[in-house]
Image 1 (cartoon, rainbow, N blue to C red):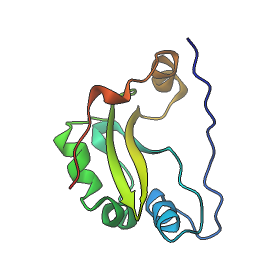
Image 2 (cartoon, helix red, strand yellow):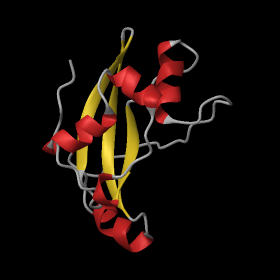
Image 3 (cartoon, rainbow, N blue to C red):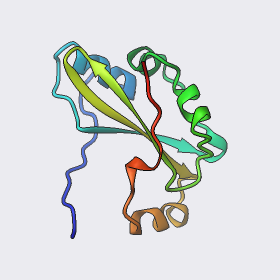
Image 4 (spheres, rainbow, N blue to C red):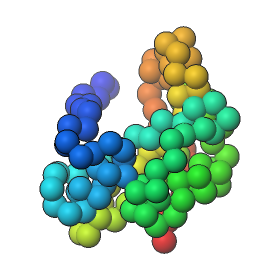
Length: 121
């Protein structure tokens, strides 16, 4: 059965990162997304985001490392951020080298987000 979803980009003037967006949600300046994706490239590389770390309560690098995420296209691990009374799922998604050929196979296959999750306390 197909699933319909809506994907949008961040559009707040002062929002430059996932962490900035989550802080804006926590401050009540925008509505929370159901899911926020953080791209993870080859060898587990990602853009370090101190704001994301502070909202998660743990370093994103530790989430990626504990799940042994290598950045292979389609790999996924999820975490949860509590933003006051709001809950937002943060997904670290392997995108390899971000080339169309690397991303094509995972797009064809339904992503199972329950494959690995890291509890954050």
